[in-house]
Image 1 (cartoon, rainbow, N blue to C red):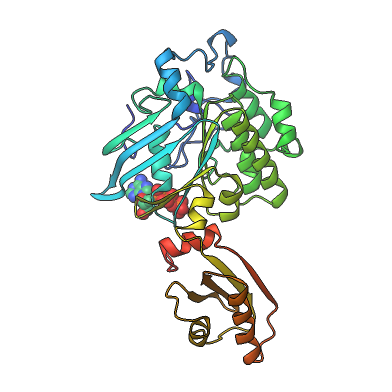
Image 2 (cartoon, protein in one colour):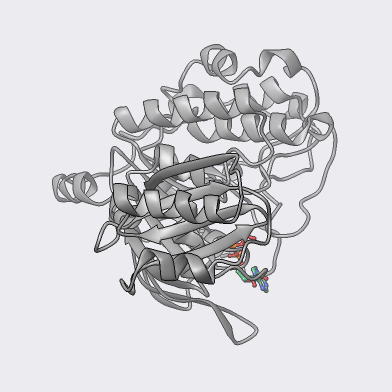
Length: 377
Ligand SMILES: Nc1ncnc2c1ncn2[C@@H]1O[C@H](COP(=O)(O)OP(=O)(O)OP(=O)(O)O)[C@@H](O)[C@H]1O
């Protein structure tokens, strides 16, 4: 069994009965980026016998397991992971269901990737339990391989292999893979099909890594910052693919720093900080809060003194006003027509012509910043 800190074989290599080989020799580096072995050119690698390829149905799934899978695809209870005696994941709970997108949000260093890696079987927990499709991701790694797709934060791809060649090789590990050409078309891989991974841009690499994660028709997919560094067109293609996977009943667990991505895609959001779950719910549940406060958002000249505004709005203690970035103000509380009129009158009294005044619910980003603070980590 792999020991912590040793080079490890990640998502694609874990699907193989032998290592992935590439045309160019390359070596596994740090554990986080080491997903592949590196010793033999791809052209020298023996062909894969389709009879030995893996499928979801090939994994031994009892009727009881199948029933459990339908309800909960990923269940993390009281997860603890320590590095050098420091708990970077500290009693974390997390659940992900089939046919749903579960987003894990949190500031840098909150423990998201570590949690996901424990679910992927790449890290051994120091405490708590992790179950993926009812199984232990470390002890039952072999049974889970055909059913779990993984996209590491940095892609984790071997750098010497050509993009489409890699995808075809991964697809060949499965008895019933998705069409490589269709997937390549959807994610726009054909334009750089013959380029080696090391020469791909960050966004292109991400797209190849995503394709490799889903080509085997997994039941559960872990996507660590799937659209990081992607242009808007690629991001939309990724989002469409994620929605399609969800419609097909796949459980998708993703981490992201893009609040609009989480708000658009996620059925359920877990917000993590200091290795703990601090909030959980649908986007609507999280943004409505208990009292369903509204927000007035104002764009105007920076540096307005907001203390007078709260006095204008009256004695209700739930009013709050802030300037989260220069010239952008948020006023949260029980917004109604009279309150909005008070806000615009307050601006007029100061001779301020706002560029925009809009009302709405709190955004997921508002909630995230309220819960995790505004200081840099
Ligand atoms: N192998 C390791 N050895 C020691 N510390 C580690 C190791 N891996 C992660 N850490 C530490 O654990 C903490 C959590 O890291 P993790 O990557 O899980 O956070 P994250 O929430 O995914 O952050 P980000 O949003 O920046 O990706 C960080 O403080 C990190 O430095």
